[in-house]
Amino acid sequence: MADLYEVMSSKLQDMSKSQRAIARYVMSHMNSVAFLTVGELAKQVGVGEATVYRFATYLGYSGYPEFQKALQNAMKKQLTTVEQLRISEDIYDRDTHATMEMFEEEVERIREMSQQLNMDDFQAAVDKIVGAKRIFIVANRSAVALGSFLEFYFDVMLENAELIRNPHGISEKLFRIDEDDVVIGLSFSRYTRSTVEALSFAHDRGTQVVSITDNQLSPLVPYSDIALYARSDMSSLIDSFVAPLSLINALITAVGHEKSTEIEQHLEELESVWDRFNIFSDDLE
Image (cartoon, rainbow, N blue to C red; front, side, top):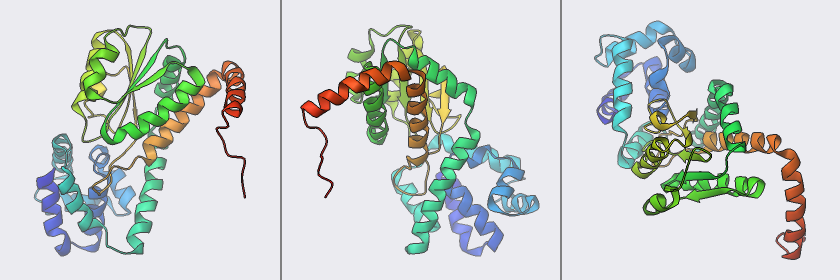
């Protein structure tokens, strides 16, 4: 991917306005544009399909199919943090307009996730979670933030969720899992090896595996009974978890709806405990 982006970056200043718009869109949608048809990419950028074809040939490819294949192959290599930072410098100017562009892209990520979400898979994931004896959430590095959020609400509602965030503790936590449990893996490009290995182990043990990841080429997918997708890519040294968190919010809400009767009674009991320990502040002044 680095080579492909270096080519686009090096040619950016010499491109036409339409070509520059395509290049910026490609560089800021690293994990999704590789799956768009020429018509879909043209629509997203707001140019004609012929312009997209010419853009591919301008970069030295025989046509859009070869360019798209190069994108998909490049995805597998994954950008380093340094490469992501360099790309962000090509895409964003250091001004308020660039900040607003980033906000708009976050909104677009949520919209794209919601439009592409397979509701049958989503409901199947809800059913597996609701029926699970135990829920193990595997997340590492920056994805731990998402895992902690998911664990907190599932544990409040269901009392059977545990986050495994230490790569070295996975074997001790998972060696007793069976077909009545569910393992939820969260990882996004660049994917953590320990999360992939944990899902592989769970899959081999016959445990139900649900992954929350960024695209169909994610290494989590082959070991998942159900994969739910939300983009995390942005042209920066950090990941964007706006869309994945929105997906997790929807998952928590749906599980809560399925178990509403049991959860209501449980929360009523918790409220009395929270009052006893004075958990929440009453001072709103």
